[in-house]
Length: 347
Image 1 (tube, helix red, strand yellow):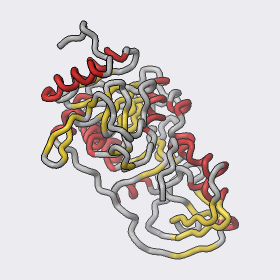
Image 2 (cartoon, rainbow, N blue to C red; image 1 turned 90 degrees about the vertical axis):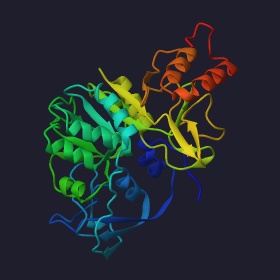
Image 3 (cartoon, one colour; image 1 turned 180 degrees about the vertical axis):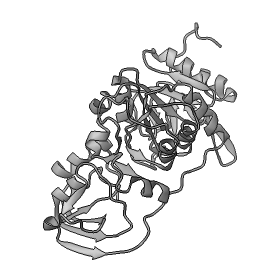
Image 4 (cartoon, rainbow, N blue to C red; image 1 turned 135 degrees about the vertical axis):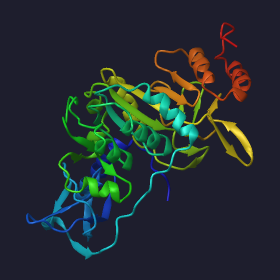
């Protein structure tokens, strides 16, 4: 197989207009009294797949949570085959944050205020942010996110999430998928507070931009001094999809009072050696997940580099300031080599 590059919020239209679909096989909840099967917490593009498919096979599992929203169900009249199953929904325990993750999270917490609307990406660092929000004094927060995760349950149960200040979908937690443990699946099951909507709504920058004080928090693999952000490959090796980070970065920029954060540890280790995640240029073959024209703020354990409104030499200076100190001189030399370091830059 081969990777198909795309922006996640466009995926439903890929199925409707570009991809031939022979068969879809979908896990669903048992039939309700109206003749519908619920897709559970995976509605991002499921209806679009069904519309395009020649054959629809459903696996009915009573353990799947029933999720309310839009395009969240299919009528039995549209189904070709049904298979019965009874196994637990796969659980993905949260990756526990380390001390550096917690340091980055504490920096981001300082950027939040009452009434803001949150999107958290996947990984240990966003989990750390969620944990700290749950234990904070913040109030009347909202959630409009791609993925609903365990830490969001904690935020709700500790009274941080009300959705009362949201401009749209007021009082609702909006997501397109959920991934976590039984705690998450029990919480979203038949919960009218949770609204699961297709990804071409949840991740649409024009929709996101309607939410005041929208806060987007995602992670990445590395960043170069031009502000190009790679969240999906290690050199030429694809390790994840593009996801929604670029959409939420755009949406946060459109939001009144919005802020976008791309987070990473300043270094990583490989083969007993330590490398900087901030590089003069991305490794050849690396994907540019968020190009430099959209890049928001980058956060490491050493601080925040806001890239908006900054010329290339200013970006280089800002990014080097949040790199690990052991790599400052090498990064300055790299910036000089590629012509984006001025003599007036601070050393």
